[in-house]
Amino acid sequence: MRSATNRIPSASITRPAGRRDRRRPGPDQPALFDSPVPPAPPGTYPTTLYRLRVSPTSDGLREALNVRYLADSGFEPVPRQVAGAPALLVHGIVPRLRAEWCDVLAGLTGEEVDLGYSSGGGALLLAVDERAYALAYGTLGRFMVEQDVIDRTFGVSFAVRALMPSDIRQVRRRVVGASGRVDRSFVPAGQPIWKYGIDKWGEIVGQVCGRTDNPRLTVCRCSGKPARVDGGDALHIHLCVEPDGLLADLREIERVCQEESPLADLEFITQIRPVPPSDPRMPDLVGALDKRLALADPPALGVAVPGDLVGDIEHVRSYRIQVPKSGRRRTLATELDLPAILAHTNGALDGDRWSGLRNGTVTLYADAGGSDEMLSTRDSRWITAEVAIDTSHLLLHEGDWYEIGDRHRDFLRQEITEILARPSDIALPPWTANLKDEDAYNRAAAARDPRLVLLDKKLLRTAQHRHGIEACDLLGPSGELIHVKRAKSSSPLSHLFAQGIVSYEALRYQQDARATFLDVVRQQPNGRDLGQEFRPTKVVYAIALDAGRAVTVDALFTFAQVALYQAMKTLRNEGVEVEVVGIPPA
Image (cartoon, rainbow, N blue to C red; front, side, top):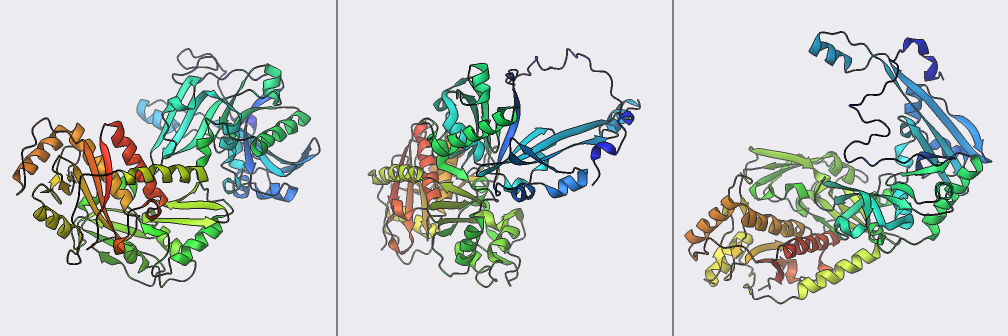
């Protein structure tokens, strides 16, 4: 295999001599919001450290190489030893004769621009005791390691056990149920974790940075002061540059991960974690889910509206379902429920059910005939499930798997139990057998109680919600926003809880929405004048579960519990009461 460093003579790449550019931040000129990186203590170097899910042997280290990338780049791994530990060394340079932006500048200015550059990097893979690691350097080092074998819990696992809890510098977190939303907070001087305003029970922390004061680590021992640590998928830390010292640092990092408990202020970070595709439990997870999709009435499986579609779902009148390898043609349904999905998976072969949903699509239409297309999403994003593997409790939500800690579940159960136990002044009539759907029930409830105003399907079209939103299904006697839902399982309730937040925020903060709402209320048969000063003060979720089941904490999926908790917390922060009432059967 050729070395990329020999492809082009070094003389063929010319660079202007380096010079100080006062207009561009240099090493000692931090850019705005960048954290100045202190110089490395003697005997250490800033390193990106990965823990690998391979056997700590020479063969295992080779399995962790990104073989295709190395072959394309002409990089040759070389067996080595570091203080007696098996190792693989790979490094090289990828030269570019001409930067891609040269043509852009030439076209804009008419001046010929012809500059080349090169990128370099290296990786050292090590087997130390019972673990395998990769140390990555330079621009290219991380590409030399196969991404699927990286233990993505490693960096955070060390950080929550090693950081000084009063000196957290940076946090990156993702909100559960709000698809794609990632928040990054940075405080150069550091502060306690609670000041970042993280919702401990509704957000996933994927990165936490701060300082550690561990004298067993070379960087702390040599500098005599706390050292910066960045824990995410990888661990960014200054490691010893001497062979024996490096192994001592790796052993101390592993000891912290295995023997130290998470710090009290940071323990919540470990309670809900995304499960990477490379997780060894993934085949069992996928297999269990695939088997359930063959059942007519599978346990702990449901359909939930993806978080980014909550605002659009009220305008959907039909769904077209397409699932590859299902043996069925595309079907059009007026409601997207679990039986509609299972009709496409029940007859599929083993192994094709879940893969079919991951590759299939649900297309949303604004008309019942399926001609006015709104958008399409993957089938898999609509499926929610809870699966137990050994002692692990894992959840499927919007196509991704999450592992939920015992303390997280216990806390949620306690919070939801308290919410459900709160008494309510709202008493709704039974859902009799002749009332086939929510529309019929809402009409019957308003006809029976003249204090209720029927607002189901009365859309408020505003500048922000051009297609319109429903403020509620029923308006209570004291201005309560009552949202009604009948569900065979708890999976659709996540949408109901999120809907309560959307409608409240529109009525509270959007003047055009509030004005339209007041006008609509006045025009209804049981309508009344709420006054220009009206602001919602109570949201009521009225729920009828299938077969007359009571609305209890045991009846709700874990992510439905999370959605209810988030709705309660968001609305409570606005001074709005939240109540949940069960609609009795006939």
